[in-house]
Image (cartoon, rainbow, N blue to C red; front, side, top):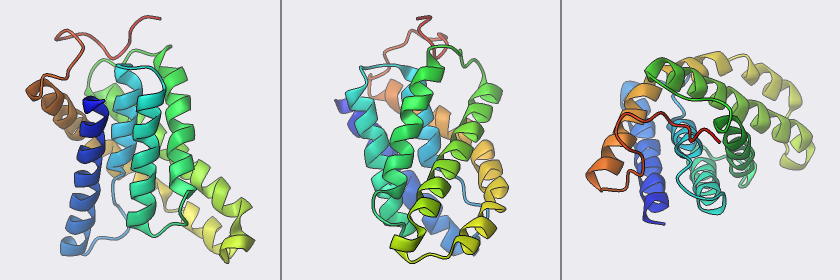
Length: 181
């Protein structure tokens, strides 16, 4: 449970850091989704049964909802569905090296964005959002995904180092993020 709490705290700090840096640097288009990287790490570490890591994904989605001003529950659901998909993928794919970590984080953020887009399109009338605006915003997803790809290896390393420092790392050193099941 402490491991899940550390994931949530790291996620919250990274959300605040990215938002703060975006404000300072006056960047609005290319912001990385550090929460997607954390959810990917949670899924591929396979350190616990589904409920605790799923709670991490839901908590990070909720924090993203609050931070981005999205309708509450939109990103919460997107991160939960994404975690469940990643959990399935993690049983079939071994992540070795920062290139694969970055590519899987890229795929994760694209999946999160597509699920979010689907929810917002389905609920556009209820939320009072124009569908044309949503479709237009979908064309800037590639910048979001590229930024996430670029920050994935350092964020992944930060998580590994934090878990090791707190003695919460359950993998032997050098073992891939996959249990072979």
